[in-house]
Length: 200
Image 1 (cartoon, rainbow, N blue to C red):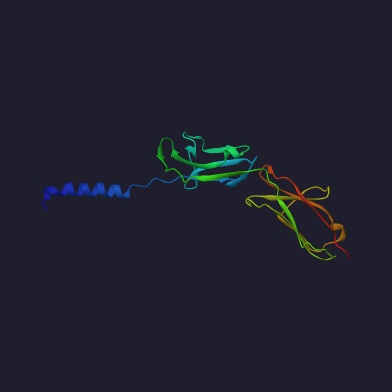
Image 2 (image 1 turned 90 degrees about the horizontal axis):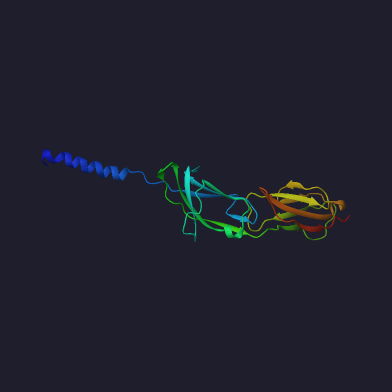
């Protein structure tokens, strides 16, 4: 190879190398809190993230709409309805006007009607003094982020787990048991059952 051709060769190698090492755009990600499956009346926040952090500016799209849905960094539905359900995607930038990310994968927000948990008791047969009985307050459609409120008869509510066990049941444990669930500012309906106390 002639010496006069060497600068041109080095220039081509430099261009190729620069193209190969050019950083790939970061892909944005949509997160939904408190959950992707929520219930009518809950507060729901859509967040556009790049590498786990929020963006400075962003563009939101909802499937079925031809224009930008929102330009907020976080979009909040203060009282979500069924019409807010759908597939959402976003892209954003960490600095004003530069370094735009790739658009995120679409994330589906599902909104269901007002919810009532299911209250069950085990065992269901006649109880005797000293037996153990377990009450379960169950959320069938979504288990994320709920705390449970229990009440017996007209007594005050107490916060507890989804499962409540009486290890040594007494006659006085009989009565009407009710539970409901809470997530943020959202409360479900009550569900109740009449539990017979233990026989001696």
